[in-house]
Length: 437
Image (cartoon, rainbow, N blue to C red; front, side, top):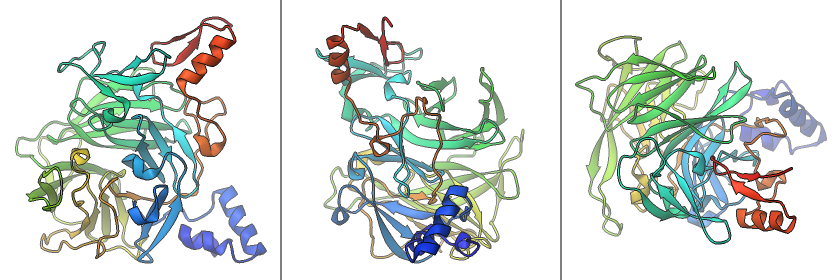
């Protein structure tokens, strides 16, 4: 068990197949949650040749690819909008969001998109949701004329980036979503049946969770800290906007020695390939800058390098790791994937993926050549995890089909209740409600 506890997850899972005694040690490590926790991030992507349900995992340690079969719906039909704690955050063709762990197969449905303030469900004659009004007339803040769109099209313009954080103080989890219009924030705790909008600020691009506070960074360099621990959310401005700060993307990162870094990406926009439609310029990261975050500081302080440390940037929960603990990684480098909030508009375009060294902006290199991945859904960094997310049995974050809960369409439920003579209605959060016991 001591030997197996030092292995990366692919090696650990292979070791568990060698013989009965090794299998017993592997099973014990998993049940005790004593396997190696500091796993090296991998690049998760899809490939047309691998099949619709298959996720490909490129190991930076072994320089090889693993293939994993994921539960319904097919991964190639989903959008990937985040990666945290070993889970992908995906959006299906109904624009509903799920967490899925590609290693364990655990799948968890997040609260319905119809419970976010800007989205209103529209029902057909059978009582099933078949369209959305967005942004909803009932939203407290109406920015432009609402439009009616099919369920599959909302995800094209609504969800941007999502996270799931472990709330150690409560022994639970918090999901956070950056969404449009104007990249607002909404969150949901375990036990919630709806999303809660964090007002009034906007233009967020990245988040991290530290010591009970949700830190959110905007494109103007502002950093806000939200305290989500109590019944009423409070917000503190850690840093205001910086007049000279105008990057193409930002990330906020916790560093191992304590504190936060604000990371900015500057991009060039290249001409698209001739066979790509629509012909939208393709972003190409040319420079990554580091800025130290000091509480209350008026201006950002630039940092030249990160000796013996590595960044992972993209649609994942932004990471800063010690190169000494991860010998397969290059110190003072950033491994990056696409983080463009308009990815949906250029599904056929090549992705912005690579490795760049700090202090030498000519050091950019390809992660692997030739390209292994399909351009859509956009590849993402993920830290493999064997840990199962333990939720109360009556929790509203419902497990998906892999965990034995069949998915029942709303129209079917309405028909079932009608046959039983039980009147129902649609509640304020879009949930079915019985009108009598």
